[in-house]
Amino acid sequence: MTIWFTDDVIAAWAAEPRTTRGGQPRYSPLAILTALTLRAVFRLAYRQAEGLLGSVVSLLGLSLRVPDHTTLSRRAATLDVPRPGNAGAGTDSEPLHLLVDSTGLKLCGKGEWLLEKHGTATRRSWRALHLGVDAGTGRIVAATLTSKDVDNASQAGPLLDQVAGAVASFTGDGGYDQNRVYDSVAQRYPEAAVVVPPRATAVPSDTAAPTQRDGHLQHIAEHGRMAWQNASGYNKRARVEATMNRWKQVIGDELHAHTDERRATEVAVAVHALNHMLDLGRPSYVRVA
Image 1: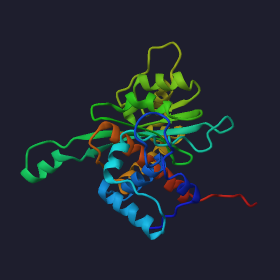
Image 2: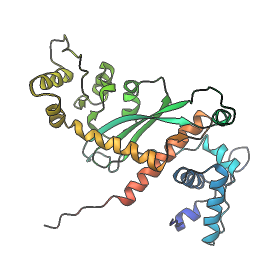
Image 3: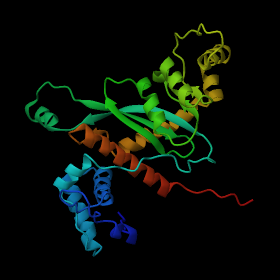
């Protein structure tokens, strides 16, 4: 494990004095984010994250105060984590190809401890994590956390609202084969393509002008589903599945926070950490001839 503190981080570690009434905070959002990032990456409890950060600061010989576990838990409910966004988004950047998918994250808490200790017949609770990934860079550009009763199609709009810049295409699995998904994309990006496989029982629409979905159905009927996947670029969706696998391997498949606000922060910190790892480990290609 290699950790270093830049001069800018050391200077920004303490919180800025507040001008309003109330107690003065000791730690800046950067300090809290650093501790929560270590907690997420190494799958630690708050006390363990406090101890690890304290050991690192001590080994580096820095005179920085380390937030205690109580402060970390309290500040996690209100921490403003930097939004992921897409690298290079701007007026001159190319529209991104958005890949979406979802997975389940189990909840950890006293209910799970009682289940293990007393063997009560209680089902394990979980939440649904919805991610939007840039097909070009592999970065997570959008994320939402919902209850298990929320379907994938309802999150198309919230995911699109988090994307900075234009979107060239929206690609998802068969769970997004609903009219509201096509409507959500069309309202925000009229020129964007929706690449979603129609259900096996799907029939053409009764509108005067053929829709994108009608075009998918016609191509599948004439050339087959596998040919449609190659022609439409649907196979790129494997990249968002790889991102889900990275999440499970690095962050895990559990949520440890006990409130919705802290769970949202836990997900945002995980997204921030995974994107930072990708930025550090992704090679840069330069054409030489």
